[in-house]
Length: 197
Image (cartoon, rainbow, N blue to C red; front, side, top):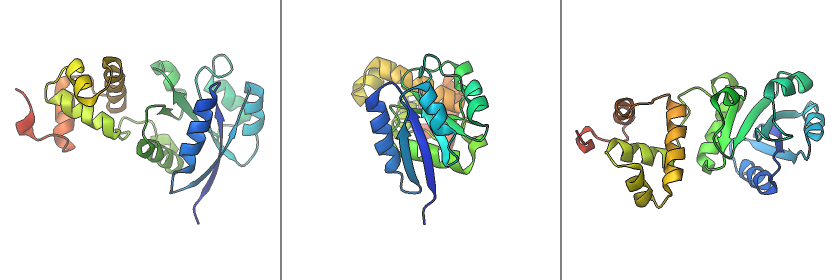
């Protein structure tokens, strides 16, 4: 029997709420049911129910969502996951137990949720797993391609490549080309012979 998790999704965008709910139902290792909150007070009331274990919320929900104050209202044990629709400032990001991005693929989302359920305090550490797209970008960066060349090769916008690179730097806490090269070699993303010297 799969474990069951009850969640609440809070975003002012119905497409995010619906899309996330459907994607969460596809996680095969756990049975996830989701309710939607339409206001901050609705979110508080739904999260006070004992069966609700996790909330997904955009940082702008209800004006400016404050995870610290929210925990005081509903209890410390609830897991708060930020829905990243754009860059979240580091001081805000650190208030969430984890974040999921609207550009995460289903495998990345699944591994984040499973990791969060099984080990909440480890969820947001730098060893967060990179998505397949992020691994592709790391490989191309290490091989010496520019953001524009990466965008052309992967049929993305330059802005999307830059966003991926920021997410990679945040997840790995690596902010130099040398560090990224070492990471790529150690994790078998590239062979040393493929690197431009």
